[in-house]
Length: 252
Length: 329
Image (cartoon, rainbow over all chains, first blue to last red; front, side, top):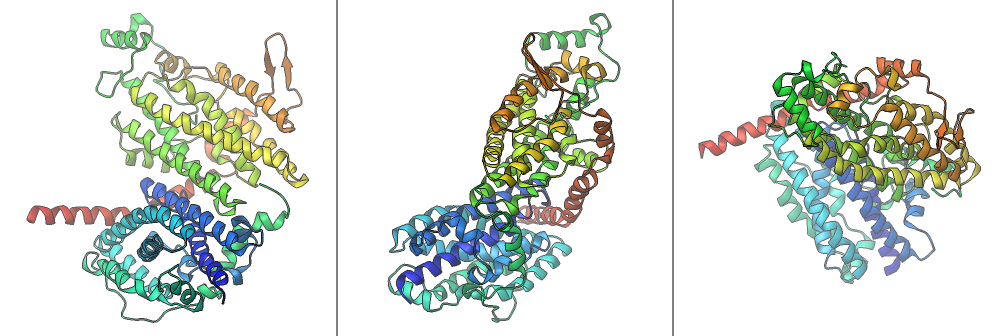
């Protein structure tokens, strides 16, 4: 694998994850549990889609085939998507959504921090910008998971259910492959496994402060990073890409 | 805008002679252009009318998220998706400051929400129409936000301080919303044949419901006189509707789209367009709950509220525990 191929792959993984997660979060618009949360969810989706434009924009540039961020978002099929599986998990109740956000934010803030010092200046610049947004997302998602974990009996139960259901989708964040290895070597990206200990420390707050129990399992559902997805992604893309697909050549 | 048929005292306008001395002094302040602030004395009718008007406006912003939110996941480009998300987020923000403005009058957000959910308070009739194509997102920005701005710009001068100040910020954002709507329409109107057809269809469906946003004709508008005397309402429904038509017709012409009104014509003498009335029977049916989407819209809001009960309860319970812990330390 050449460095260019590895870089393209890596940027798709970042950009597809923010795109698909942003899509999921945006599904909440107008349906949040309280007005402030509606606003915060829309804002989170907005940041994620904004990050998508940057990551996929850079991916298209690296690819050098004249494609744009929109081409990558709207004109690839599921097997070409490289998002983490956790991003495509259905929203479920608010507990699932905010737990998914926390587990992702905890990872995203770590990788963005490391990428801020990447030897690739384009990546470093995006990571610095996105890092500021994600710091705020993490503060909010951690706070909500902890408060709802240590809230009522019902909120505790729902948060524990969400944690149990999403846990198998966290391991994929830390599994490296050839593409990662190429980028680690040149100092462009961190070794995914290096992020694990800090992520564990952040997530342990669910136990220490949120009174939840972290699942005792290291089993990881994988495939997202290489284009083997769950059934959910096809439906997301069918909805997201529909206008572009139905009216080829139109500009919007 | 988003406030239609707001009931005032229901007793008609009081003459100076009928006013108590306090009411007279209050009216003097209004007439002198002073702003009324939350702690100032105000007639009960003024307070209740404002609560209804601001509450209805806030509810409209909240319910208004739904028809536009309907297209976020299907927005055709990343940049359109971002703009639409930002816009819908602004609408929720408007709802938030309007509820805050209403709270200064002594009514809580929860009470207003309850009134919306039980049907005691209304939201604008316009949001009971469906968004069927992407062009509808353009039409809403162009026509619906355009109509809203017509009404809200003068409300920046309304007599109640917190409402007037909320309006200043809202108007800035609404004018951005209107521009983005018109920008979508430009793309569609200058696009492929299918896009032009979508744009025309959106205009056909949203034209009359947009005219209805200003409320019934002045001759049938029973609550206007008192609200205008109190400067809660600055212009009459018909004045604003005329202004909207005069502004919008040339914009439609520029887009190469046809306003769905065979009797529309420019009157050189008056300098205004003459246009057909919307079907007021339809308007009253929509207000009664018989619009195409009333049940879905209110149903979605009630469901969001009910589904979110455990979240709100959980957060409250945590806050109580947390403050007990601090007190114990």
